[in-house]
Length: 307
Length: 317
Image 1: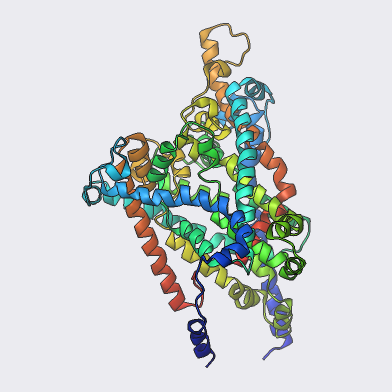
Image 2 (image 1 turned 90 degrees about the horizontal axis):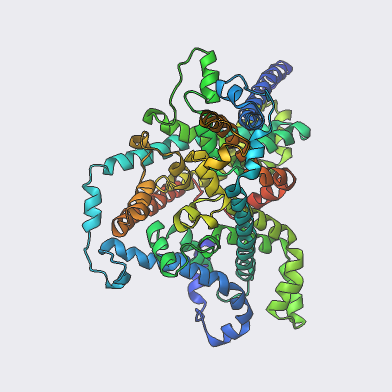
């Protein structure tokens, strides 16, 4: 069936096919990258050149005015502070809830294993929905407090399952059993043997929870009216989506001669402030992401083991 | 025979009581480890399930959930008979099916293409770049869309202008809303969506490819007959989850892109629940609509999973 002719023909088809695949990748990279480069360029370009479309890839008429205004924009920095707080406190709470629970569920000799696993899996498919959850949080007196952001979504059952899979596959049960025979209690096994071996999964979970909290706005929209508690994403929503720029910030703190000039400054600056704000808010994630990419990927992989 | 033995075994074993004192004593430290997460889920996931009762009641906050008067199916009927019922269903399904058709194959193609690249800088670069949008917040994505798609200042309309296309009001024209929603999700999710397929592809035995090359199989044939079958189980599971969640559309992104002008195609069940319940304070009505939505969801997931288990060997449970 196979002859040399056949083989040669196929390699030519292969080469063409490979080119098609490479074009697909290049296209994907360009489509993803272009908007990101555009944002960076627009944030330091002359707003008029940005709005008119003259600036389309590289910065034109470089100005740092946008960032100067952002630096003085109090709401952004207060939001930044709150988001840092929510991210660290929320991640800590989530880890304290997730890791020990997942460990217990990973123990083959845990008598409540089946029952608790079912109890948790049910919540992935059934839930009360937005309104009953909101009424509960309100009844608990947590509306307009940081607890409304930190607690209701603190446990992700999906993350518990991922962590459980890690314990089952990466921490040998024989080792724990040996310790048990030597008289170690379950606490001792968990804290002295399992936790020291769990740095990778703790890192993965901290990243999953942390990025999730950093980027979320919905629970703040639902539960917070007090602007002092707003996380960064809520401030961003005001600037980017509701297009509501603080009057004093937009006029740029500089000495403005007339009302007309102030109005002009406002609309022109508003344009590039938007792009600057996108950069400033995403910066921590952008900086951290390339170094930690493999941890994120690892998290997905452990998760895919068990469906 | 083997199947028979398996079926007999569990019944033969004497069922131990779930919470006997002896077992509790043996494992009590493990119960302590699980307790905090258990309580959190009990309060924030299970208690709201009890709260669903208000869908069948006229909820009055001062009377509480139990004390409020029963009204039976009143709010369900009100929803089914409303003039916007079919609009909400059509918009929800329209956006979700559009997203599934466009968004489902792309991560697979990307993963197959990335898998053919040689390891090295460019492969890493392509992966890092395409994964990146997954980490951009939905608020920033919404801001980007509003800025880029602006009819007079947006870069997309400037670029289209080069080809003689007249400015399009993407954000305020209901005709464009679904496309904007779906394509921006594709932009954000395709790269990260390929990770799980790449993992499945990494598990393919290289010996299969070597044998196929010896037999004269072309690259296309090898991808079709070796790589694709390797990711079919993953595809089926993800397809079940996606089709099963056609009705469970999130609130987060659509709320940001919604405005009074595009409402006729952007109003979906989720945003309707949000605005009726939390903006207008119609708690019982909104809870009823939400419950209707989750029931359809559960039924859909079970049906799809059942079909998948009949057609292929893959299913969720």
